[in-house]
Structure formats: structure tokens, C-alpha cells
Amino acid sequence: MDKTEELYKKTKMLRDELKAHAQVVEDPKCAALCETAGEVVGGLESAFDHFLQKSEKAWQ
Image (cartoon, rainbow, N blue to C red):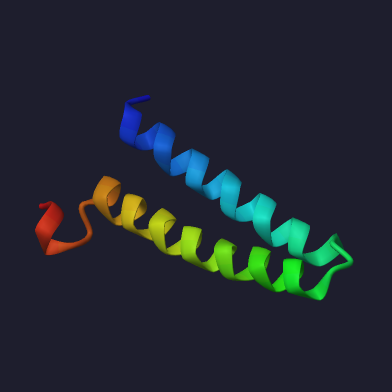
């Protein structure tokens, strides 16, 4: 596995962890923060996926 694949997997794990934490944390502001952060990291995850799949013209 190369470094790009490793970073992709780490972003996926972080997104999943943030989304899960948002469901169990008692503070609504913290839950909103975790949910928002999960969405941001999800965008980064998508960028890595597009790069690895070469699905965007810029990565071909």
C-alpha cells in the first residue's frame, strides 16, 4: 500500500469516528462540531478516492 492509499484509509477512519461520536456525545454543540468535521473530512476522503481512481480529469 502506498502513502496515498494509507492517507485515504485514515481519512475514512477519522470520518467514521467523528460521525459515530456525534451520535453519542451529550453536548449538542460538540455533536454538531463532530458532525460538521465528519462532513469536511468526508470531502477530503472523496478527493483521495478520486485521485486513486483517477476519476477526475486532473488526476489522469
